[in-house]
Image 1 (cartoon, helix red, strand yellow):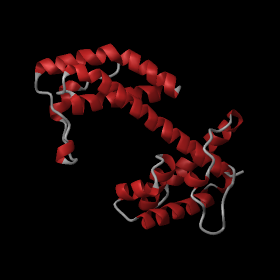
Image 2 (cartoon, helix red, strand yellow):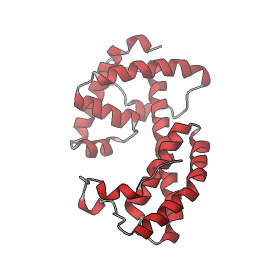
Image 3 (cartoon, one colour):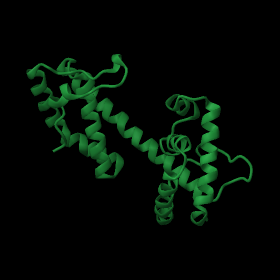
Length: 207
């Protein structure tokens, strides 16, 4: 139903830190055992994710990610540890998706409300009220998100990266700076320049 991940591990080309390299399960017995374990939990895990996220595609992605992480990093742990590890990973992935959704909704609520300044704009992620959009605002949100996606693609690379990490992934300034490999001041500059460009591009979608 979900995916088969164990037999392809030896084909993975790892480019990250050596100490974070995924575990390679060369023991056929271990591979069979973890595949059997995944089959026993996949439907229940999918149901948990679907009930939490209310979206089957997002739920499927979350379960797949959790399975892959378990196999990649914990396959050689004792099998009695797999279940708690898997459900902890699943819980964390669900929270990640929920956090990104809240951040996107906060940004769109800020955007469609027309909160802006002629000077350096306030950070919408830090200043927006943490609330989901009302049902009557869903059409506005959908239209705004479509226009936003097109406008974001036209941003310079560093501005686009800063915007996506801050406004859509929900990272704070310090974490964004770490990902981008630059100072926090540079993150703020790229981010606010991106907001300024997007204001111009999305003027028709502000209310």
